[in-house]
View 1 (cartoon, rainbow, N blue to C red):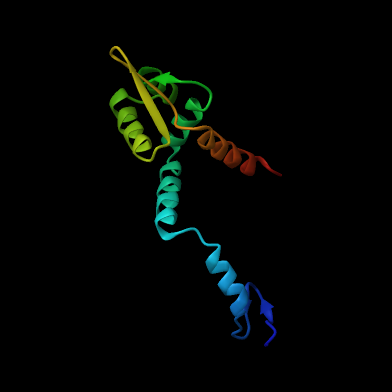
View 2 (cartoon, one colour):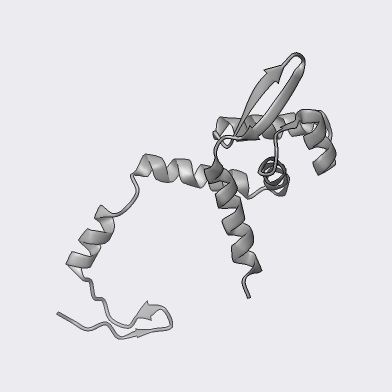
Length: 122
């Protein structure tokens, strides 16, 4: 088997390791899940949606309160919440005429916190 002479993140000669490639492929997440995950991260890549999720990671909030926290109009916040709900990042419950939002599960809060922890590392 050829040895790789790697320099600057690029192999200087073509070399492949079939067993390693096979193992890596077997460990890959199925394509449909890859699409769902990348869609979720795309949603998380918006500052407004991140702020909404961060606020909801601490407590359940109604749409009016979320709008006040992120300093946006209720209709704009409602649009963002629809996207987040579609991705199953948030859920809501109706109480009379009020809609109360919360994170869909603790994994969403954990994901946000991992991101915060990562950028705060020195």
